Amino acid sequence: MSDAQLTARSLEQLLGSWRTSAAGYQALADRIRLLVLDGRVPIGTRLPAERDLAGRLELSRTTVAAAYRQLREGGFIDSVRGSGSVTRLPGRTLPLPAVGGEGMLDFTKASLPAASALPAAARAAAEELPRFLPDPGYDPVGLPHLREEIAARYTRRGLPTTADQILVTVGAQQAIALIARTFLGRGDRVAIEVPTYPHAIEAMRLAGARLVPMTVTAQEEGPHPVGDDAPDGWDADAIEQTFRRANPALAYILPDFHNPTGATMSPATRRRVLAAAAAHGTILVADETCAELDIDRPGEYLPLPCYADTDAAGAQIIMIGSASKTLWGGLRIGWIRAERSHIQRLIGAKPSTDLGTPILEQLVVAKLMPQLETIVEERREQLRLGRETVRTLVSERFPEWSVPLQHGGLTAWVGLGAPVSSALALAARSHGLLIAAGPRFGLDGAFERFLRIPITYTPEEYERAFSALERAWAVAANEPAPYFDAGALPSVV
Image 1: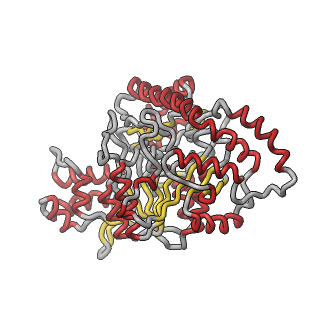
Image 2: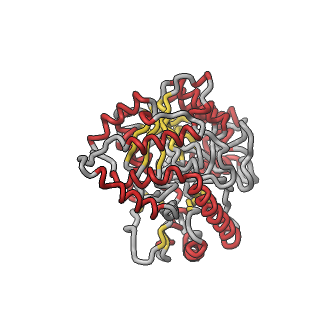
Image 3: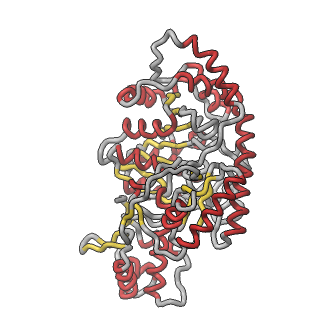
C-alpha cells in the first residue's frame, strides 16, 4: 500500500475536462476510475473528502457522494468512516504461468545486443588477466584504472569526478539494492516515481521502506516540448508537496529517458527536485543507466548534480551507472558515483552480500570505456531504427494505440486505449511472445492501459512480435482485465 493523500485542488487538476453528456456523478466516477487505471492516481491514495471536492468542483455533495459510491461498488475505492476513501483495484489476483519455452520471443528485456567492439575488448582483457592472477581476486571496490576511466567519463560530461568517488558494482541492480540497504531503515519513506523500474521497487521494499509515489506521465504523440521549463511528464509542484508531507529519507528517480515512459526531466524540474531534496535532507538517487542512450539530442543534458544551484546547496546526490545498457547485458558491471563519505559507507556495507566484482568483466569494460563515443553512436542508430519500426507497426496494425515520441532510451510506453494490458500480455504468451504489461511498473497493479515495448530489437523480430500481439489483441480486447500480483510477474530489464 502506498502512502499518499490527494487534495481537492490536485484532483481537480488531474481530472481536466471531465464533464460529459453523462450524469455528473457518472462522468466524475468514470474519470477517477480512468486516473486509477492509468496510474495517475496511485493505488492506496486517499481521495479528498466529499465536501472538499464538491466545493472545489462546484458540485453538490450528493453528486460527489454518488460518484464515490459507484467507485466503491465497482471496487475502485475502500471507504472507512473517519478514514476517508482510499483507491484500490477490483477483481481477483491471478498468478502468471512460468516464463520460458523454446522459440519464445522475449520482449521483457529492453536491452541491446553486444556492441561490435566487445569481442576484441574481451580478447584484449583476457590477455591482460594473467597479471592479476597472483592476487586473491576479491575486489570489493573496483579496479583502480576502471574507476579512473568512469570518473573521467563523468568529467567529460561536465561533472568533475575523481576515482575515489566511484564504487564498481555487479550491475546497476546491485547498486540500487546496496544503496537501499545502506541508507534506509525499516519504516523509512522513499519517494519513488510511478511507473518506474520494477526491481527498484522491490529493492526498496526489501529494505523495509514505505513507498511514496510521484507520478510520471508520458508526453503525448509528437515532438517533446523544448526549453528550460517545458512540460516534461513530472509535476514539480506535486513532487515538492510529496517532499514536504512525507519528508522521505531517500528519493529514487530516472531523470534521463525514464524507464518505462521514455520521458526526460527538464532543467527547471531538475533544479526544483534538487532544491526539495536539499531542503528536507533527502538522499537523491539518480539512476542514469540510460542517460547516454540519446537518439535525437546527444549531449543536450548534463549529469543531475550540474543543475544544483544555491537553493540545492548541500543536496546529497548518489548516481547509478551501468555498462549493461550501453555495452551488453552480459557484462554485469555497474557503478555508483557519490561523495567520498557515502562511498566509504557503501564499501563497508558491500561485503555482507558480495565479496567482489568479477575482474575479467571489469577489464573488458575498462578496454571499452575509451571507445564509448563510437559505441554510443552505433547504439543511436540501432535505437532509432527500433523506435521508428515500433511507431510504424503500431500505426499500421493498432491505430487505436498511441506511442509518445521518446528522444532516447530503450522503451516505448504505448497507450492501449483500454485497461487490458495484463490480459494482452497473458494472451501473447500463447502466441510465442513474452512482454511486460503496464502493471509491472507500478506499485499496486495500476497502468493497465499501457504496454512497455522495447525499441531494441530487429525489424524481423518486431514482425514476429506484432503478429503475436495482433492475435492476442483479438482475445484481450474483449475480456475484462485481470489484476496480477506484482510478485508473480516475471523479471524485466
